[in-house]
Length: 487
Image 1: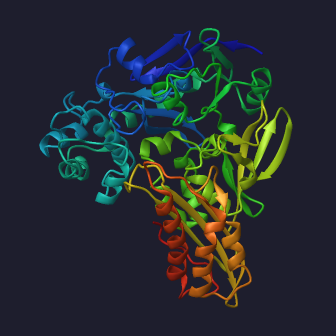
Image 2: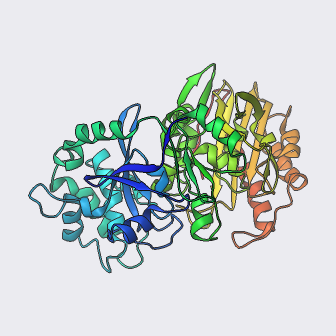
Image 3: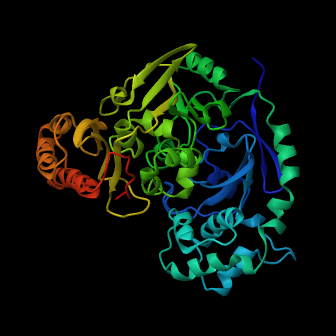
């Protein structure tokens, strides 16, 4: 198959071609060390603080889309066919400060200034999408940006005032959209990309079929989707990842659609890309979804990657298991379908063969009588890892529980269903006493560990209390589906 050996993208206003790009080369290092674009800062090097935020524009089925992302854990190889925008590219209509920057100055949104470029880029992305945001929308957009000295009140005041300084329609990104689209279209020529030195090779398949072929050729390769976890393997653990096969550019893995009574989510769809359809079908997930990391990570991380990684504290597996999700695994041209809970075998071990990858997640649509909840318990409300996560789906018919699925994360070596608690509920009349018994039965389902996030006793008590909470929130419900607020 014809392929090329260089990564091609647009950096601010210039076309860039970079050869010999190692799999573990980060965008942040490239910007600061190779291009001397030092406005993008390194704070945490793990996608938490947002000081390294840049915008990445890419072509989608709906046109050119720009997302704020963390440059510290975004690999350079993944940017083929993209438009990277750093804080140095921002400018006002008269060549002076950009409206976002001027608002930050006037509202005293910067003190030491180290985190400011990241805040500016996140607010820039929000302003382009929502020119006059509410404070709640600003707070959600800034979940992935941390400030140690200024305090967030002046930054929020600046965010809601930006449109007084200019219109998004006059912004260069808006005015140059057609030109950038045309240039990116030329860069994306549909060829496989193989670059980097032997042992640290970066491979970008041309399409999903080529991905399947690449994994047969390199069955031990690291699959990199959003890199929100793999990025830390490199920046924190100095772990080699080559050869690495990148999938974030594959449109064929990003399809999100309703078909045959279910929501079909391509494994490469980011949290942000599938949020609208998933929360439209299941509104109880809206608050939960906004608590998955921060905006930058939700733009990079994928549901398929969260599942394939197999972490017992992953946010999506418990709620998807409760909804009865299935996954399609593919190896070459062969596919097999597996209930999601059966994919997780043991800590760090999943039912995925060498050369196999997660292709699709299928989530059945809600049925009459179902009541749902999704809960996340963490030390910090925003942008934190779960101590306990829970997904609950209970079907009530004429006052009796006719079906139930309860799944927890953070309670065992894998995301896991609470079989004894489900048995305590199934066939019983809807009552507080029955749910109290189910909470007690959780002791037979889980023996959680103690770590710095939570003790074993805390996790056990919390899990039982979440079942009691579910009952109390639904006690006045009828047989119609009920949508609940999330923890």
